[in-house]
Amino acid sequence: MRSLTPQPLTADAFAPFGEVIEASERAEVIPINYGWTTRFHDLADVEVGEGRAIISLFRSTPLTPLVLKIFERHPLGSQAFMPLQGRPYLVAVAPRGDFDPAAVRLFQAAPHQGVNYARGVWHHFLLAQEAESDFLVVDREGPGDNLDEVTLAEADWIAVRP
Image (cartoon, rainbow, N blue to C red; front, side):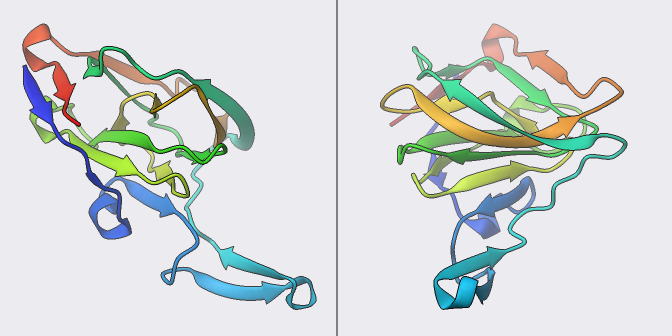
């Protein structure tokens, strides 16, 4: 079994897979509400194709043991996750196209960072850490099959190292 150690989640490292959602110097900063609010503008490209954007809450329980066995992708739209309880989480992704377990990358997301998986990017389901955690999710609702899953052969399972 292959093992991976998470690397820090940065906008540059994650760019092949989508966008990191965070208040940072990379964002267009716009003062609004008479200067009482700062808008970090246009942080992610929400792709919905023929559908519509929806907002949901997902509640995720930490995976034990921490072994990656299943990946999914959404061919018709993007999917964004923003943590709501100030807890870190893991992000496991692989490039678009045919799934290649050797191409999986693992990121450690800080409690203030969200991610937007681009349309067609392979990713593991939510990987909460520390405790059950809620995430605000923006994704696509609409016609067509927007979920592909792959179950890894046991030889391709990925153990997550601390």
